[in-house]
Length: 299
Image (cartoon, rainbow, N blue to C red; front, top):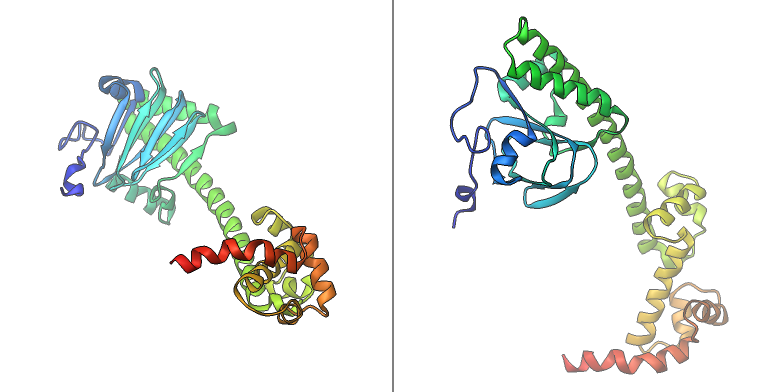
C-alpha cells in the first residue's frame, strides 16, 4: 500500500479541491467543522496552505506526522504545508482554525522583510498571559471573515498582521530557548568525550571545565541537570565501569588494574571501589564473575 496515496489531501478538511471564498485565508470555529466529524479529524495534509489552530478551551490530541501530542491548556498550533496532521477534540472544545494560502504568507514575508520561519515548523505555542489578546484577535478575524463589512479586507489584514507579529515574537523566544538548551547539550557531550578520552589520567575538574570554556561550578550544574550527579560523579562512574569490566573480563591483578586506571596505589583504588560498590575488588570478582561468564560461554 502506498502510504502517500492513503493520506487525503484537502484545501480544507473534507473539501478536496475548492477554496470556499476568493480570500487568501479561511477562518472558522473549531466547533463548526469538528462537530460534523464527531470531534475527530482524521490524518490529512494541505499542499499549499498553513493552518493555525487556536485552542481556546478544551482538551484532546493533535497528531503531527504520526506523533500524538496531547493538549489541555490554551495554545496555538502551527500546521505547516504538507504536514500530515489530525485532531481529536473533547466535545465542546472552543477555538478557531485559521488557514492561510501560500500567496498570503509570501505577502507577509515581503512586508516583514524575512521568511516566516515560525510557519515552517509544527510549532506549539502556549498562550499564557497573552490569552486575552489572542482571544480578541481570533474573534475579530472570524467575525470580519464571516461578515461583509465596509473595509473588510483592511481590517482582516490589520488583525492578521498583529497575529503574525505575535507568532514571530513567540517563535524567536522559543528558538532562543532551544538554542540555549542545545548549547548546554553540546557542552555536556564535549565533557562526556573528554572523560572518555582522559578518565584514566585523573585530571582535576578545573582542567575539564577550562577545556569546555566554563567554570567548574557551571560544569557541575550541567552535569546535575543532564546526568543527575556532579561532574566528579561522572568521572567516578566511568572509572568504576572500567574497573568492573577489568575485574570481570581480564586476568589482571587488582594491582595491575589500579595502575591501568591511573590510581597512585592499589590501596587507594580498593578504597574507591569499596566506597562505590560495597565490595572489595577481589570480593566483587569472586561474587560476580561466574554469573557474567556463563552467558558468554553459552553464546
